[in-house]
Image 1 (cartoon, rainbow, N blue to C red):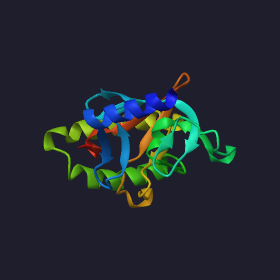
Image 2 (cartoon, one colour):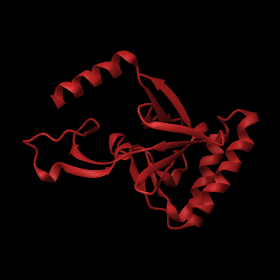
Image 3 (cartoon, rainbow, N blue to C red):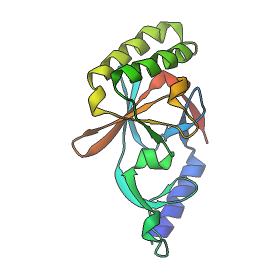
Image 4 (cartoon, one colour):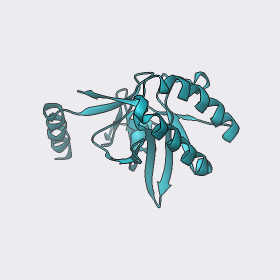
Amino acid sequence: MNLLLLVLSTCWMVTAGMTIFKDILTGDPMFDDDTNKYEEDGAMYKVYGKSTEGNVGGEGFNLIPEEEEEEEDMESGVDIVLNYNLREVAFRGQKDFKKYLKKYLKKLLEKVPDDKKDQVLSSYAKIFKRFESFKFFQGESADYRTGEAMVGMLTYEGDVPVMYFFRWGLEEEKV
């Protein structure tokens, strides 16, 4: 029965269309419109995830464990991170993060409309206030040292994982 529901929901998503939000600089997918997302201050997306466990496949994350899978294939974490193969980035402190951010903003601001640039810059200041509460993630092809990729920021509201993404650093792709 669960398999039937999975197949039906997948068919519905394909026919109804899905939007993937991709890093505008790398093209790496970061999340999709199947998640609960909200705009915050017009410059950030606040995306609610789920803590989950399942088996890892070559194409995304399968939430329904198959009986023949061995335990070593099981992985737990936040669905957004697992579904899009986001990799954790370990900044060595705020100074290291500022160095990354300076490079990233230079690249990003070339793509942001002029009337939105102040909005982008003000959203970054808020991140430094909460820096210690975040874990940082990038798409699988990204290298944070180049500053040419977005960093998604993970924190928790109680037990609920929440990721923040810079709105102007994303492009939408309908699939």
